[in-house]
Length: 140
Image (cartoon, rainbow, N blue to C red; front, side, top):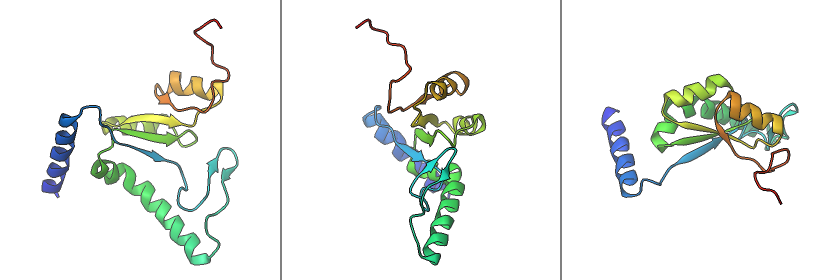
């Protein structure tokens, strides 16, 4: 396993040496396989499957993905940035990812209060769909 890890690190460094602007990122949201969407406070959206075995298979996939992502998936894929769903974020998850050398971004942060919390308290950048509630730096 150590030889494989070394190979991945060398490959990553060779790619980045060729073009240092190349980065790899991955997005994560809870219940990505089993449900169509996830929103706070509603929670899980409609299930993707109606058949009994598919529901439990997708739920198992969600559990395996949640377990594997912070343990080895991030390393194998070589991500530099992880985009975490805003309703999944916590200070602990941000610190855990930082300790692995991975930058954290939140998505999709739309309300002014969420933007303020994400930027000031968690000290991470975010992706947004709206500029509502943000002060403009230009006088139009």
